[in-house]
Image (cartoon, rainbow, N blue to C red; front, side, top):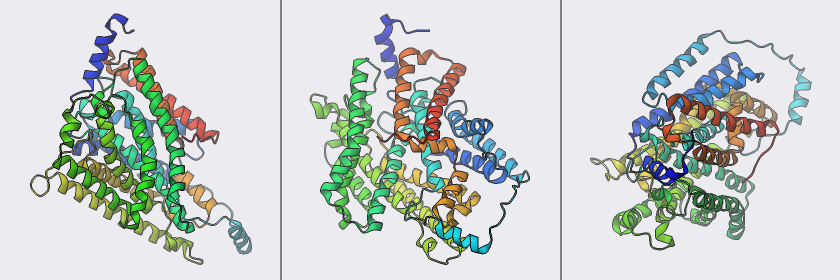
Length: 504
């Protein structure tokens, strides 16, 4: 079926109406859908830890990897969108069954003589300051996969309207997705800061700005390419999402230089979390005490700023989310110092590392949850409503709290089933344990996340220009989405197999 050129304008209006004036769903339902990701991680980890199912990595292993880490997430937002708890229970049942099956035993490698062991260990590269922990790869890989699924699925009727982005007030899965993308980018951005601190470097602001602009330029170019393509192809667009010309790539592109500028404030504030809260509170106060809120929601579009007011002003909320993510990265990326103490017991230091992470991550999860509660509760708090359109304080706190809890859930799976990772004493051993504890599919998405996200946007545009998505049935919709995600995953894994990283 093709789209008749005589009805192009009316069909475009139908598509714009399809994603407009939506009110979203409940926070609890969104949490149930998001919970599918760590539950899938549990199933995958039990298969690997108990049965060594993905070692060696066979075509069957790839198929199961894809079905779990992509297929289950696809089901959660389509066929099981009304029953996410049921899907979670089914997955937990599978995990329990696999766990109860007798564990696969492997032949132990012959032990080296003591003198050979000491020579071997002395030649291994020692651990550095930072660590790429398995649960971070699992978290970010799942977030990228769900994002890629949703940006195309939202154009089909099978995708529930309560999962699509809300018009002004409320919460939805896609609102959480865009915030999570920024939050995870903040986690990654904490790595160079930690390296600078470990090396005792004091990087001048001018150098920070130059570096940040190098990161920003490709994103801003992508933003202009998207703008020109959307306008040139007369593509359906939701103006109240970001504005007439603004898009998400512009938001991502302007984040690095602003973060570089805001880092100077750390001389006064104790942490990135404090900076994020200060920015969020100041922005919310301006929304409540000035005409800014009315301007964003109802102002006329008669100049460049007013045409893009949603994108321009919501940027400050996304900046706060990015800083909150950066604070989380400062917490979860460093290694425990006890692991680098000469002569320390591996098992003891690993236990200390896991316990420290658990306490810190639990503590910050509770802090973000409490702050969100006080911001939104009508009886005991301020009674504010979440608005992704403005990226206000409640939205920032909701994103931070949800991502902190998700990270904690992924970490618990990690610590329970692959505790030996936290006792590794050299780079080679840690790399082997990391590969053992992470899905190849998730590693591939994590490695080239932004490039795959860009490719997903291109595929989404191609599908929308060739398929009348509003007229497609349930079975055909699932088929298209499976083919789309299959192609994306094949590209991601292919790039990873050839050791190819696309830096944008």
